[in-house]
Length: 178
Length: 241
Image (cartoon, rainbow over all chains, first blue to last red; front, side, top):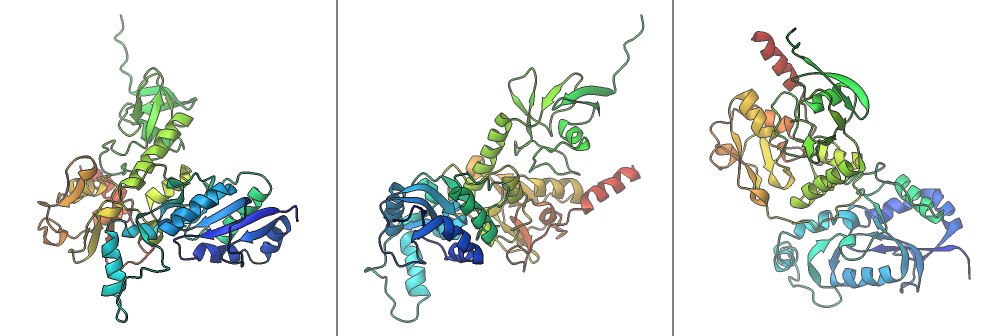
């Protein structure tokens, strides 16, 4: 068992742009790998969230029942939870549907804008919740990294600070929409 | 006995610094003249102040109330504090409430990167909004041939109302309703494109601090505002008097 810190990333209702930006730290990922093991992520092949993770980066808003249960589970098994990007921090674009009823949103996507197989999926695809909301309105969040997406530099800065046991000061480094 | 000399210049301190002010000078003007930053949103040089946004609140020794710097005139012996933990807390709360009251989605906004609300949030260190968002259902008025009004991004600073009334002299804009129901309206609450009083000058668009008013055809982050005209117009008018 390695004595490295355990790092996880979670993908909720987002476009995966934050994960792309994370990968944009390029060769610096070796510096991260020297300090931490990526134990759970869309980028690795582990299907179950480990018993305890030191740092978890969350991309995306809480939009579906799956997101809701997942983030509550992740919070219970994570020491430091990081809201990564505007969707996690503000609900951003996913929240633009909040003004409409879920039925209207589904109708728009699966009937109005569909030409083939017009039907609302009921299996496998998780149920949408009434509203898309920021992660911190569901579970306590320790660190916020705004940006759409946050730059690779800011992600690397936040990660290395956290891995070194410090609190990153991001307030004046990035902003909503950055 | 000599008649007391009428003071035209006031001496006071701002953040411990001794400064001299004209008696018609506000704390905000005085602070700016002395290189002290006080955040503002509704303030706009060239039109009168209304103290609506409450971001420029300052502490003044001797009163427990916080006073808006843009509406408070310099007085002899005043001790003004423009920067404290208490003020920062209130200013951040103001921004929190502004973000939560409408649908501000910076990532897809025409003014992304050029927005005063967004800039101030960064400046005052807003990492997230602490109160629940309201997600109101708000209209976008694209009936005007040149410009668009998006209520989702309006912070009710009323710069548009004041510049239209005081500088252009058209008074196309006004506000209707109270509290969360408050809206900027054109003429008699009708589509902007049908407002006869509008001269299409676009001053309101240029002074709007967010992407609530913008030029048609602008995509994300493309809308930059040009407001150099305002101090210039004011100067020319004063010179003519």
